Image (cartoon, rainbow, N blue to C red; front, side):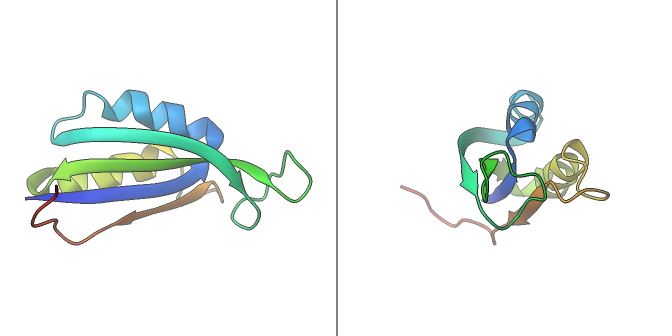
Length: 95
C-alpha cells in the first residue's frame, strides 16, 4: 500500500525536496510543479502573490512517517511560514 504526501511550499524548497526525495528509501515517485499563492506565505515577490512549489510524493506505507518527517525538516516548517505538508490515507488502488 502507498500514501500520498503533498505540500504547498515556498518555491525555493521545491527543488530541495525533489533532490532529497529522489533517492529516499520508500519513495516511489516525487513531482514538483510551480505556481503562485496569494495567502500562504509572508514573502510576496509579485505584489499580492508569492512563488510556490506544489509537491506530490507517493511513498510506501512503511516509510510514510520517515518521508513526512524528512519533508517537514527539509522545509524548516517548525520555525517559518514556508508552507504546509499533508498526508492522505492509504491508497488502496491507483490507475
